[in-house]
Length: 376
Image (cartoon, rainbow, N blue to C red; front, side, top):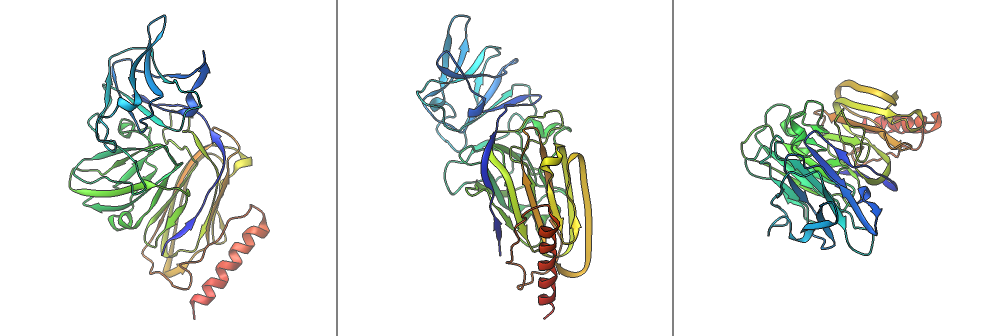
């Protein structure tokens, strides 16, 4: 059974994200000037532009020294298949902008613009356009997904032949996947684990790397309640909303989520935890607990822990975090080993309440009680 835990929307992180060969812009990047919302973007060598919006009040414009000339309306970008947009190609210029020429503050959108010399330039870009979501099937090595309607998406149903360590999910466009400074948000621990995992991604843009060009498939859809789903023999990924994953940028994507709380009782033989974090202040320490073991972290660094049990054992796992600064960013992947599900504990949930000893002791006590019940 799935165990789902929700996140709470509280505030917004605002910043455009600039990569070596691309930029990602959102509505929060607009500046109000001369009675219009406007934001510049790079296209030094010529570029390709993608967006998930077809709003007729949004434009690409070019400043000619006197006026901002309309190049194309967003409603005319992408071609006829909305879920699989064609790139809109632009000649080299340092005077391009996106503008909202409507009367109201713009609705959410994501705008991905890629240099013509960027790696992986032939990668399909897909847009989530309805509640069903989309399937990334075929023999492509990469798929890039755009989605700005909700704060997160969920990937699942991975199937096909994969190399070791694949599939992977990046919180970037296809160009940054080729950069060693950009690490995947999710990396499969095994093919079976990938097929059972449901990965929540708090990003308006993400890219799946399959690792080869054999036949394969995945499904991705809006995650409307910004929740996590847990399955035995699978992986769970947590991250700061807006997480990018490239060491050369301190920027994050815009997100209305700044608080994470999740808890569950997996019955496992092994548990592997790997994480990375940067500029997490003490006031926003990430609270990660596995039974009596406190794995909280702040500052800058990496996290690596491995646990093994001689037989399936129900653990009390909890995660809690509250954003206090715009620059904090982190991601953690938890891989649960080959334990058989225990009906007595698999549907139990635990809410991480605080860093106080009483809150932790409560979680540990519940874990002990559940373990005793499982023996009968």
